[in-house]
Image 1 (cartoon, rainbow, N blue to C red):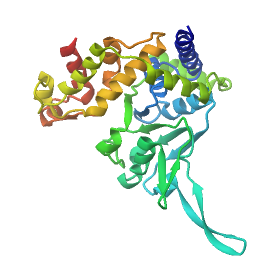
Image 2 (tube, rainbow, N blue to C red; image 1 turned 135 degrees about the horizontal axis):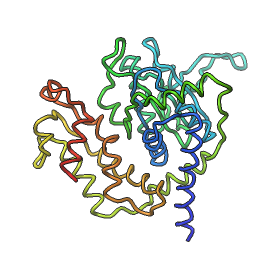
Image 3 (cartoon, rainbow, N blue to C red; image 1 turned 90 degrees about the vertical axis):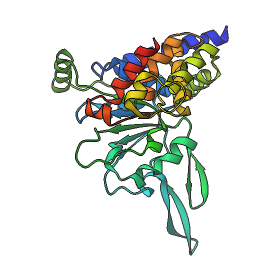
Length: 324
């Protein structure tokens, strides 16, 4: 009974978080749902969209709703790795000069890496160890990061001037990649109404970091049927044009497919979706639901796809249509 109660508590908490965020964020329900799912699954998230779509506001609002320690790094061309992970500085103590470590903003629970593609790869890569290992190494010493530790990065489209494409190794660390589109006319009317009349809404804390850790453990402990595992792995395999059984869309339009981490995140994402729906185990439909956010940044379209104007998102939609 206790296990079922925990699942119900997780469902209610997810609904409370999304309801509270809707007081500030207009529309974008699918984006918010997937962002909350990435938090439950202990996965980092990448938000992609042109300026002005409330990417930063969304992450700041989540930090308020969760009541966790929050830091924001504005990525710029002159940002250095030490500006992220910290550095040792010389100071005087008891009449002697000695090194003292000064932690960087990465030592937090929720880190907003704002406009991550506006800084060179050397600085982008400073987040790699932190995102994967949840620790940083400075002057040969390992320093663990707080728990929970989650990175939400925002990114402007690569084709904009003054940006640096994220390396594949960095992209693979993100569980989800979420594309924010323009709001509908009615939603934009509501955005303008909320932001130009009266005071901004004050968000309430509805979920603690400790409770989030419990839900993350629940996601990890959730059983997965063989059919669901098979669905996740077969989707990843189908994106690989050089493997034994690629999908037709992969053979025609994909240069390189998704790696094994995609299969892992498909299962983690499906588990989080099941938990948020109050179910004790994920289903194949959950795998398909999270597939676009998991796979779109892990495939490389070929020249034919580029010539026909097909994006990675278009290709994943075709891939899912083949697997229905």
